[in-house]
Length: 213
Image 1 (tube, helix red, strand yellow):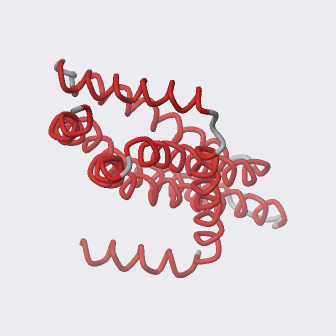
Image 2 (cartoon, one colour):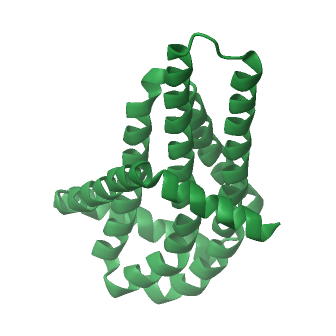
């Protein structure tokens, strides 16, 4: 069963290599823009963000942060992204906005990681590698895959409109497949959310004294 799923995923990526590459490029551009934006911050802005980040670390170091609350916040944030990608996929005009959304997600990743590394140097790199990077490696590929799924579904709608005789059963099966793929990748995203809510706080508590001290 797992072997068949793996084979289907590999075939899917090969058949949609251009779309994956273009969305990955949009994400990389977003990351680069976010990192460059950090360099453009004024001294006052850097100090304010640095104080906010130090306060964030002290909160984890001195108080017990409920993982259940972090889980709720992370679920809400990622559910919004999944829902928006799903909606954009069922609208023909939504394709450009999928690229924009992926680019914005990349900007957030680049800015947050870039600022942390810029603010505390090597310690920031360690913080990013062990707290941000693992969940991003799970969530980002799934977001890109959801974007590819949405783009393909939009293009299928265009093709079906150009065909005069298209059965309702065919449209229904395509829509159900589109929804199934969305739920499939959403489950993997939930894995990244679990890491963010239950594992990252533990690592932050371990690293926080080293950074704040």
